[in-house]
Length: 107
Image (cartoon, rainbow, N blue to C red; front, side, top):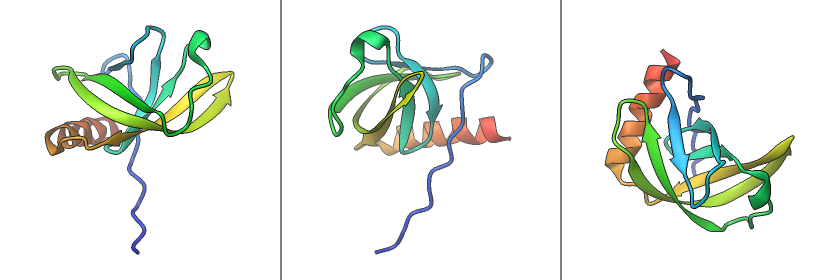
């Protein structure tokens, strides 16, 4: 079994924002990579179960919104709850869109 290198993550900026919508307002994107995203959770929704499937709508700067499926892979408390979400079966078109966003932000 070969170990994969971790995906490079970048944080959104005011100039190049990311919007991820779940079924409730109050979520805030912390970072994103081709394999997943970090999302702060509003207080009234803390306590999600690990491995729970979730549906997302992702809006990167300079792109149209797209739907994605994911699952919660970790939870952390940094003042407020933070979820690590792994994308599931993300079409290659969207993986490439995220990869271009990450490369642009890292430049």
